Length: 159
Image (cartoon, rainbow, N blue to C red; front, side):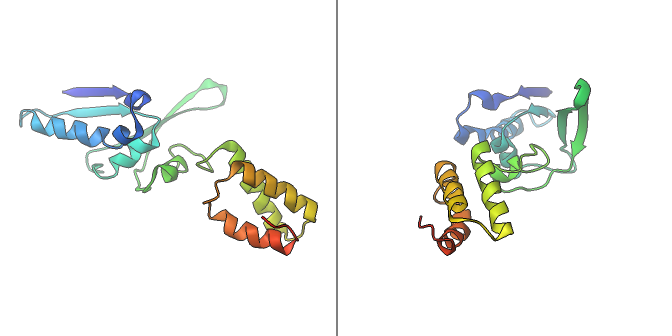
């Protein structure tokens, strides 16, 4: 039996996305013992891929990626399945290819701040401007803040 599942996560709460594949495999195992089931699952969900880590068998399972090249050509290739650990890490893996798992604005703010840190020199006004951008877009729990607060204080900016 072949079961094709196309983006089931589109209408599932994240907590259900995390258990979808293992539940399907479990149901398949409960069916007749002589019934072999093959699942073809298409997803855009890093949670679905994270949930596959506990059941993925490299001897039987495959991970494929579809992408669009310039000129509209579709590229279909097999990727090596590797444990990523979290949905954020999956977003930053070769499967999704994001450099940052948060918003584009937060990524830009962190990149601007990192470039300033690497440069080492900045005016108080530049540090204030980047601090404002970080405050607007980067969560207060982000570990980057530890580095930034020290840098800002060194340049006379209290956060």
